[in-house]
Structures are given as structure tokens and as C-alpha cells.
Length: 141
Image 1 (cartoon, rainbow, N blue to C red):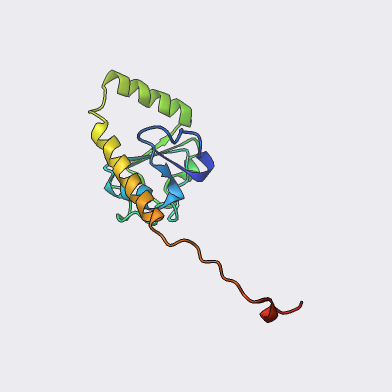
Image 2: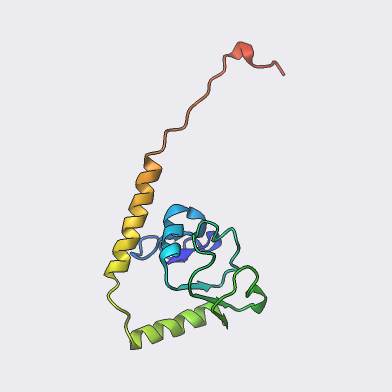
């Protein structure tokens, strides 16, 4: 699960399959690049959102939005669904309960691995450098 900046907090970050926010960078791009299916619900998909994704677009994209003018603006979806986000997600959950998906542990473990890699990469960055200029060199204005 990935949220947009405006939907941040809509899905608790503590959920095991929550990867992060769209613009969060590395871990999100890595997960999207390896995804076989992306379901985009209630979002306009822009080049900026998926700029770090290696593929020109996800292999299979289902775009769900109540506003059909959001469809195909940037990415052509495999399937466009004109629907209320909540109604669509409730129907999806009902379908999944009727036919449970495969074991989610490998996906959850991959999400954790990618997120941990990105965290370690960010932690390894140099600390910010404080530049000090002697007061005698600062203009008086």
C-alpha cells in the first residue's frame, strides 16, 4: 500500500504492507518497479508520481476514480473504473474474503526489506555541514 501526500495518514504507517508515500523516493519506486499490478484509487497519476519507476508504466494498472476526466491524463490504465473510492475498496475486500489471496508473508517481507534498505541508505548520508562565515566578512546591510 502506497499513499499520496494528500492521503498520508489514511492508511496507518504501522500496517505491514504499507510502503510509504508516493513521493518518498527509493523504497516506493523499487516496490512499484517490481509490481505486477498497481491499483490507483482516487488519484490523478502524473509523470512526477512515477518518475522513478523504471518501467514506462506499471505492467498492469487499474485506475479507480469517481471523476472520469482523471483517466488517461498521463498513464493509460489497463482498466479504468468509474467508482467511489470507498465503494470500490469495500467491493474489493468482499471479493478477497470470498477468494483469499495467497500467503502475504513474502510480499510483506519484501516490503520490509526494501524499506529497511532505503532507511539504511538515508542513514548513511553525511550529516549536514554548518557553514560559518566570520562576521567581518558579512556585509553590514
